[in-house]
Amino acid sequence: MTFFNRQPSLPEVHRSIPIPKGNNFWRKLLAYGGPGYLVSVGYMDPGNWATDIAGGSRFGYTLLSVILLSNLMAILLQSLCVRLGVATGKDLAQACRDYFSPRVSFVLWILCEIAIAACDLAELLGSAIALNLLFGLPLVWGVCVTALDVLALLFLQGKGFRYVEALVIVLVSTIGCCFAAEIFFARPDIGGVLAGYVPNHQIIQNPDMLYLAIGILGATVMPHNLYLHSSIVQTRAWQPTIQKRWEAIKFGTLDSTIALSLALFINSAILIVAAATFHTSGNHQVAEIQDAYQLLSPLLGVSAASAIFGVALLASGQSSTLTATLAGQIVMEGFLQFRLPPWLRRLATRALAIIPALIAIAYFGEQSTGHLLVFSQVILSLQLSFAVVPLVMFTSDRRLMGEFVNPFWLKVSAWAVAVIIGGLNAWLLIQTAINWLYPG
Image (cartoon, rainbow, N blue to C red; front, side):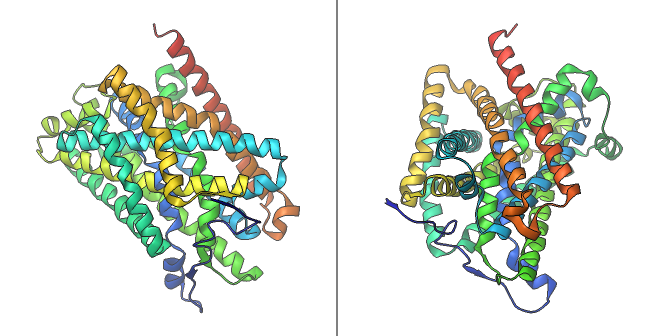
């Protein structure tokens, strides 16, 4: 472990991926493609599954409009991360350290570390639940087994960043293929699906529906993704000219938009399958991942449906956990200018997630996993604005961004998204606290 002067973000892979010369659009899109998929896994991680399942089983297709809205917000915020990383050569953590006082930066770092541990907890539980459902492995052992993925990440990082991206793309594609099959089995009402993407006034009028809608919004944008994306866009070796940086912003934004569109499909598919399978059959109270797994095959009449669901869950948990390690490295180096060896950083992050999971499972039983998933999302909601607001501030500051500063329309849109996310997450946090204090 060493202290160091200002270094580029993720120095071991910084500008390590060459960009082809010339004007071939598809070759350049392929070269810039990858970071968006690492970011997209945060939008389809196991923490989102329970909310999507509950929304579909209780209210049919109605909340699809909320998934669409939250995804549009995510696309905008991730585009700001690309703009910040390319224009300044800094990731969000480094920008915070340079802009804020040491005390404020330290507080932001602590909050971000807590959020990463909470996100890792959700992903760990998702993988452990998948192993339990597919192979009957007890959750306690499943939690321990998932810690071994540190070896896979270290091996891939040693071979090059493209290998990490390739693995994540394979896992994301696996999730997409699994849910394409589930939609085929479920045979949803196409008219109902299309109508679901149109905002419905019932969402605001129905308190239970509004609560779930805010839960979907609150669980969609992950704070660690903002730090991660502003760093990994700098793995591309574009030429440091104004023209080439604009090109990097264009292709980086296109990459993340395509990847987040896949995330939109997967989140929508989870809700659509729940609506077509559970809501239409009268099983309106299905909210747990385990319950959905058990009921899918009997209700659809397809023996493989539950197994495919479990495979998708396992791929979701494993893909998400790879990005949590990278985010942890980025925030520690950016805020503190302090590095840990990758294996030690990974084990520290895992320990912060494994310990509460094991304690809860051992003390409260395996049925506590649902509460732990909700708890992890509440922690993420609490921290989110502390990443979104600085991101919008920095990308709207001409002194920092120069000619890459947000245009007026983007400033207005970004601040509107920041206010909406902050307000809704605060409301979700308050309502969750009230439900815990007064469960009746």
